[in-house]
Image (cartoon, rainbow, N blue to C red; front, side, top):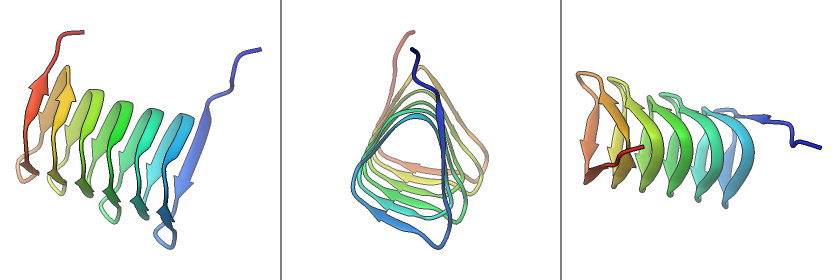
Length: 108
């Protein structure tokens, strides 16, 4: 039996303190203080913030992330602010997006 992929939504009104580990996708409008692991696709919306490390297949950031990111694909939109290290094979940042830290590009 294969595990079904989950979809988790964290609204603006919710703050999570602790690590999150899911087999699926995450859409974040609220706040997380903790690491996020094993996520297929994560979207950090403009109202959202994450303080912790993120390990995902693909991540799009419109909000704030303070922590290290390890992902196959990372996109920072014009409203994104990231402080930490990014390790990825595919990195893009829109004009206006802010990134402070180290970036390591790896081959697939």
